[in-house]
Length: 228
Figure 1 (tube, helix red, strand yellow):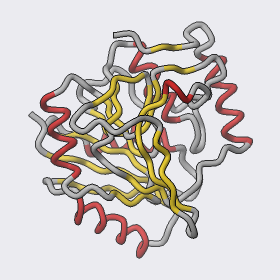
Figure 2 (cartoon, one colour; figure 1 turned 180 degrees about the vertical axis):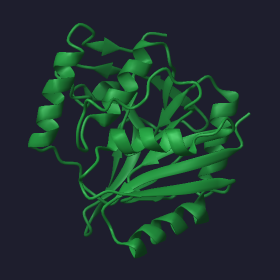
Figure 3 (cartoon, helix red, strand yellow; figure 1 turned 30 degrees about the vertical axis):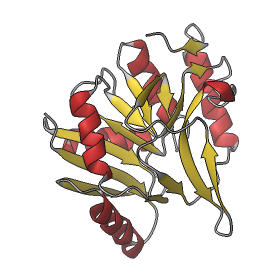
């Protein structure tokens, strides 16, 4: 039975900003928890930070949440919802957006009909909702991967840690989810936890480099389709 949550984030922001995010987590989570900030000024990949967090802060009663620090969690007591899902369902990894199909290209949004989840976005002036699928209250949809914006995991039940072959801040989520999925872990998307992403997702050359690396590494597995 899981009864606490460890929230982990990497940050290049000021101590004041980091403390604001830590306070936001505390004000919304609703369960026993710990929030761990790793100051990171591009010297460490997210995969390395997250593996370090597992080594230093995981415990047998915990669910770990790996998230961006430019998010606002709009669902009060979201921690209770999350613990309920892990304690009463079969999933080892849960996120708020994902897909049941990963194309040969490694672009998980290539077939939007296979995408699931709801995420709000803002560019500072305008807010909009990316509704990849219709919300399903209380239900967790099985998928092959979830987006790195917010990934919760039972780190005592997964088969693979974060793949440190992927440097920087891109494709780390695929590098984590796909080997776990291929090795039998159950991954799901919930729409019960609503998140506002204070950013507009953009790809860049580092993302493209990591995508090519990912495709080469998993060329014999791609495409990947969810199979019950």
